[in-house]
Structure formats: structure tokens, C-alpha cells
Length: 560
Image (cartoon, rainbow, N blue to C red; front, side, top):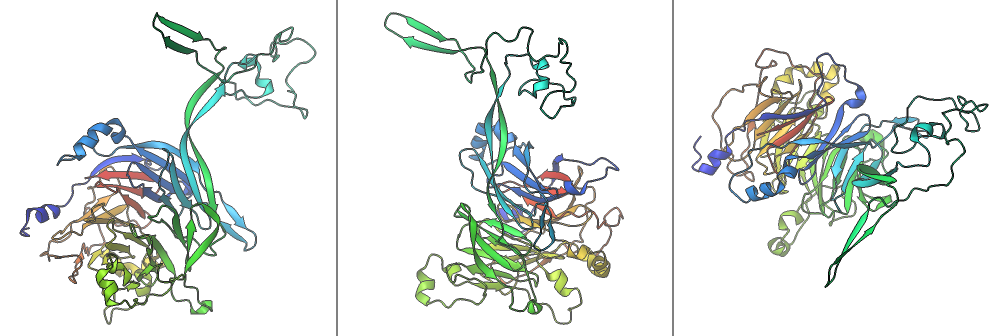
């Protein structure tokens, strides 16, 4: 493809994706527990940490290892024109129980422990901070390394102290014993001497208390004559220190949503975040957990007049006053919190010409915009509104574009052009004739997530049969790749028919395109798509071509 420039031609080359790692891989025939299914996945801003949440309310953290081993070398290579040949490698770091199942007695409603969303916060003092939420409650977690002291030298032998309870740092048999109500051990024979006694015969002559100081300290005092060595001998070592990762809940943001929380998003100011449910969006301060500010409310006075709900919300990556949210009608609203305290309108602001010309934020001050693609005449059906519902939106890293995912397509929007998407990518067009079957088995209501590469040149989203698709959205790109979440991602590669490419020109232009259409309901091997194996959650590394995706309880990672 000749676009008149070498850089554009290089950008149009499809990436060759390779398998990197898998965590929690299933064996053939292994039954997956419901609580182990991954329900959220998120990279931090540096890309050195990855967090996943599951339906059992657990959060699992992974850390990158190849940068730690070659940190200095990596920084040197980043200054050059070529990248490292080593692909990203992660390892298990820690996990903790974020949410527990609850019951709302006032509404007689069970609240699941399932993690809906995870968002990383700014780290401080080598500690990691992240937000996690289920349907009702948001929690702020701090994960840090702590030195844990354990006493291991006592007056009595650890083997003989089992009757008095476990001793930290000692290896005591875990065999349960029967204890009486007063705390005595029922197995002990008090009538005669026994080797199981906790104290030696004759008792203990003196009580030796453990001390915290653990090492022998040696100080060197240089003098003009000689070096005098002063040795301070401590008592017997009585403690050992281990460095453990400890997760602590710092804040709990509760009782602010009447409906299920579907989104949380951190603000670029590092101080606030939003949470969204079906009808409202609330603004929180990270340091204040007992109150929030409602900024969007679409609940009508009469619930019978309700026609759409909020499906996703996200802050602008650089402008702290802007955010976007999507609805079940397939529209995206971009709002500016400086204009009104309650941002539930979508009419454009009237700006004076001088403000538009001289304001550095003129691209945004004229907005509150609504992005919606008009449906073609004669194409409306019973499923039109259902498949038009947007399940996820993501801002590009530069904040210029918004990526949205509905049931059938990915759409890329320019925030300066609300007439329609600048690019549309067909994810699984072959399922359109099967919408009736998908409606009957509720698959049509599946919520697929989407993600963008760090440079904004590619987008990705999931599909059925544990497949996910990667599209190129840069100028002149015709990339459309289908990968399987397995150790051989190209095994079920779906070949799309070749067709003349149409240059996009500029993403801010009015040229639109439809890519990746696949009319076959079978894969390249003739296998039928499995609707029970759905890849809903995936994330793109913020600075490298690396994708992490969740297939049931397994976490797969790929690089290019």
C-alpha cells in the first residue's frame, strides 16, 4: 500500500501477535467455579502492575519482572531508536478479599461480591492504591510492603507449648486438641508427671522476656591513634523479620447509589473520582467517604417515562473538568462541569467569538456535545435499540477521541465532530442473522469492553469463542486481526475478504469506514462459535503493544 510516505506505510502493517503468559490456565475437562471467573482487569499508568477482579470479590495483583531485572538497561534503550527484544513478563504479586456478599434488609436484596470495576490511583511512598467496586460499595485499597516481626525464642520449647496455643515462628503440629471450658487441655494428665508439660520439671528459674533488638551492633570510631571497635552484644536473637505485602482498606464509599454501579473513573487531578449507576453519576473526593456530589441525574419524575439508562462513564485523561458517559440508546454525552452544577443536559453552549478565539481550551469550552449515529431509514427492527446500547467507552490517551463498543461494532469518535463516528469496525457481523437466538439465550445483553493502544493507532475488543479482535485506526491502515485467547492465538485466525482500502485522511475529517466485516458464522476451521465462551474483559498496556485478556478464570497475555 503506497500512501506517499514511509511512516504511514509502516503504520499500516498489521502486528504479529505472540503468546506471552497465562495465569490460571484450565486443564482439559476442568470445571470452572463461578467465583473464579474474572470480571475486571486494569493496567496502572506505568504498565508495571496489573490488577484483576473476580466474581468472588477478590483482587489479584501482578507485577512486571523484566523491567525490574533490567531497569537501567531498559532506560538506556528507551533513549535509542529501537526497543527491547524482551517481551513484557509479569508474575503474581499478591491478592486480597475486596468485597464480601451482603444483604440489604431494607430492600430484601442480595448484594453480590463480584468486582465490577478496578481503577488504579496515584501511588505514593512505594505503596499502591486502587479503587474497586461491586454493585453498591466502592473501596480504596492501599497495598504496601511491611516488615513483620515474629518471636521465636521463648522460655519453653515450642514443641511443648502447643497446649498454651500457637507460637509465631514455631512449627507446631496442626492436629486439633480438645480444650475444656476454662482453657485447659483435655488430653493432659494432671495426675502424674508428663513429658507434654509446658514447663520443665522444677519450674522456670527465671523469666526471660523477648526483646525486639535482633542483631549484634558493631560501631567503628576512628581516632588519631587507632580504630577502637565497640561491640554491643544484644541478648539472644528472639525475633525474625519478614517482608510481606499487606493490603489495607483506607476508605469505604457506600450508600450513594440506589442502582448497580457500572463504572468508576479517576480524575486527572488525582483527588476526585466518579461513580455511575443506571441513573446517576456521583463525584467523590478520595479523602471524604461520607458524602458525594451528584452531577448527572437522568431519573424522570415518573419511572414509567424512563427511556434510557447510563451504561458507562469516564473522566477525560487530561482535563479534570470534563467527562463523558454513554447510554442504552447508543449516544455519548460529553459534559463540562464548569458550566453547571448538574450536568444532565447535552445542548451546546453559546460562546462569544472572543472566548473561542483566545481561550486555550476553545476546543472544549464550546462543548456539551451529544454523539449519536443516525440509523439508516428502513433498518429499524425489534433488536435495533438492544444492539445499539453502548457497553463501554474509553478515551484515547491524548483525549481527542472516544472509543465506544456496542453489541455489534466498535466506533471511534472525534470529540470535535458530533455528526457521526470517524470509523466503525464490525466485530461479529456474521451474528446479525442470529439475533433472535441470541435474544432467547440472553447473549444479546452481554457487555463487551474495549481498549485502545497507548499511541491511539489500534483498538481491540472481545467476542465469542474466546476470540478478540484488533483493528488499526491510523491513516491508511487496513489491519483487522482475529485472535484466540489460547497459547496459540493465531490458531483460529479468521480471514476477512480483501477489498480496496479507502484512506481515512485525518481522523477529524468526515470520511467514515466500515472494517472487519465477516459474513461467516464459522471460523477458519469450520467450528461453530461458542456463545458460552465469551471474552468480555481486556486491557491494553499503556505504552507497549501488549494485551491482557480474561477468558473465564484464565488471564492470557500477548505481545507484538
